[in-house]
Length: 395
Ligand code: HEC
Image (cartoon, rainbow, N blue to C red; front, top):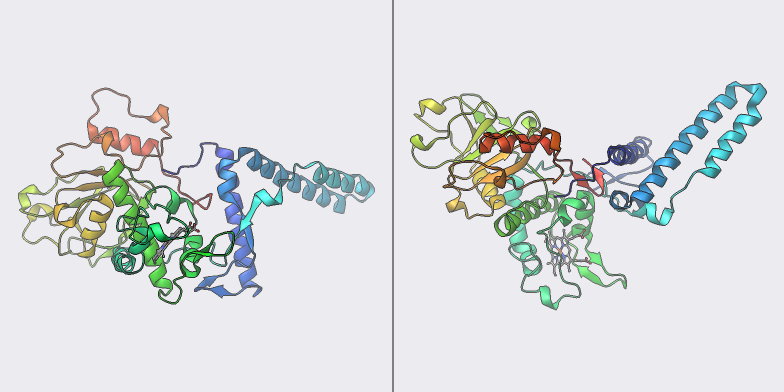
């Protein structure tokens, strides 16, 4: 999993730099100094701050932090100089000295090439529809090189200039979505300018490209879950219309981040229905996406109102759809999917945690003896919150 290092100052710095760049992007767009690219405001510069480098190079990150502090001090000195006329020269000198003494970072390290779409966000909200659409496109356009399971071992792979990377690792989670978008739309080249990955902008429109990006993430999660028993990148609960009792339905995306959710793939007779638990909302997946009928004990329960949800969850569980019944998933309060329990297992335990950040806050960890497996798991999820990093920046 790609949690950032625990330093709070580094998290603050990365958030500040990301927000600063987004603010500049918006300002340029509002002032009509930059246009649109692929339906969203375009990043007008050829470079951006290399958040991914700052994340691993603490020395560089410290230089950036001190330089930002120096700029603030210099600005404060200028402000004083403008008011305090008698000592203006002294304050101007202080501002200049602060800037001269600042440990300016090397621009070559601080900046990295950017694309007009580098800061674009996926509009598809990781929905079950986009995953299903992306699956079809992936099978048609990408499997030959990237392989059915996303490990980069498709039939054409060995004959290529460069071996396709495996998606079954942190790659897709670390890269900004907007950079992935650009690479798929325009292809990639090696340092000699030779094409390594083909461009797809003529075959895939913008919505197709976003859908295939989301599908590759679900695919990567499923392959990693079945091979290593982990999810290499954090995934949100899929967006799908959820119907609870008689209500008209609402989007799961609007619920993400408010409460824990347990997702249960349910098939068979009502006797096998899971008991409600006050610690989370229970969401049932049914094969046809229809609510349960004549089941009094689940009358007010929530059901994913799309048959596509079943396949999407089977994909990230890394098991075939016809074997999904009985599988359960747990999402934390932030809306991140964290754990999977396979059919036939009678109790949850911390071993079911597939998305772990490895940054347990020991003071809050599950230590008391006698705690049951599910409680330990929930405590561990709370003690290890996901801080999602993409392009080096926290989202
Ligand atoms: C002809 C083979 C081929 C096909 C077809 C292909 N790729 Fe690739 N892909 C590659 C190679 C090779 C690389 C590594 C390129 C490099 O690093 O220079 C790559 C890299 C990538 C990356 C990594 C991008 C990054 O930022 O590092 C992604 C994502 C990707 N491909 C997605 C796709 C998707 C989605 C499709 C289908 C729409 C697809 N590819 C089709 C060969 C292919």
